[in-house]
Image (tube, rainbow, N blue to C red; front, side, top):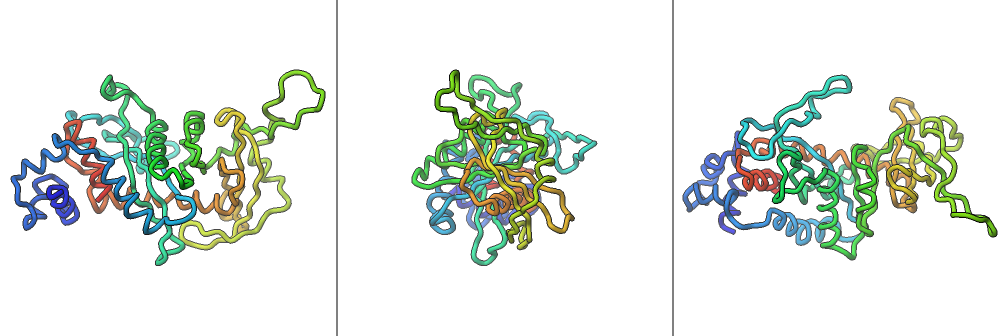
Length: 346
């Protein structure tokens, strides 16, 4: 505990690169051990990186900021640029900041899948704050083996969601992810007390719900209805919109909403979900298309939840610029697995 407290203090006070030497110098008054003891805390000491996150969630964040109602989660991945070929599990990943639609930029980095708790606090009711509550390092297949079996980003996210929802089995959760995460693997593995909210492609192959069977019809019951037009065509044909004020990106905005149940067979098979079309009445923004596995969720809340997902992107930016999430200096396997999550926790 003493070592942990010293490292947290030094990590916050440290300016510049977060090397262990600089961190201990920043906490000089509290540091009573040799600097090598603090290095071994990451590379050799026996402790579970998830344990501080679990304590933060269960003992602090939920009792203070999410006492009632559904608990909102968000999941996403981010890369942290590295240098040096000896850094464990580093590889070439797409740089989302410098890449564009027509130009793909890759860099030598680590890729972290992060789960966050999304909350609105009384002082800023229109803003969503993301608290990282768990992280997993994504490893390419070449870096995997018996000790580190290969797992996709979806599997890593599911592992964290299952662990968090299992800590509070009496509570219901909503998980918001960007449009790259919805998949058959993710939908099939979601715990029962977790509902998904995400963006859906405008050209997704959707079907109507299966029609009710006839009383004396023969053969197997139909599992899906007729193929629906593209979401862009459906939006173009909507005549009666639901006009609502929704809180998105820190402001109350007027939006036109239209929702309907449908099937996305390639992703969710026969599991129905609610499609929500969001339109800007001023036509300054393009139509947005979202879906949720909770058929009873209010369409306005779907729009607000997805807009609130942006808070996890802000958390990535702040953790990189202010707390050294992407400049940790560990290179051995165990140090790599521990130092970046420690920075997120801090």
